[in-house]
Image (cartoon, rainbow, N blue to C red; front, side, top):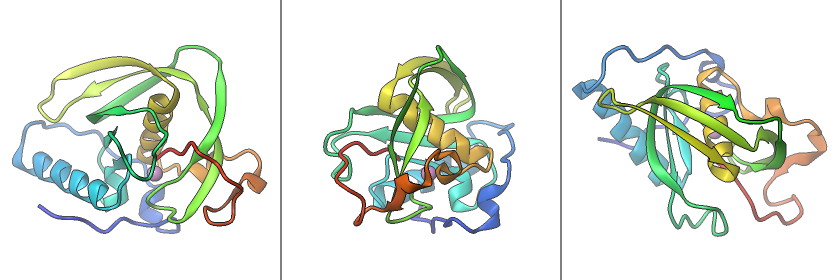
Length: 176
Ligand code: NI
């Protein structure tokens, strides 16, 4: 298995809508997911979507346990989420800072639903569903946006709240 190159903003492949996975528990699928975990770990990411390594399938992974990039963030269980479906559980929208391995060195203030229900399948084809809020909900919304060709800068309301991490005033909370 291998650390793969992460495509960066400007690459047209990041703007494509990914296709559903139709066959589970195959060596090919397990290999893709292992490469995604290897790549995420190598970059200390909190999440990664398959299109970010050039694979146009509806697969995201995420999870955060004691990550040096996010010392103050809530922990999120390591999760493989395939063919995800999301719904907001109420109308509450919060803004918080996000980054992305495809937009290196930058941060932006992004509105996301505070509470969501998400569901989908793991790599074995087993379905699951969770109700989550806060940072966990933010990570899932960010990663699933990648499957529809959406990068977080497209969600920023005030582009003054977008810039290089090294230049922005101090912010503690960050997401993928
Ligand atoms: Ni991202």
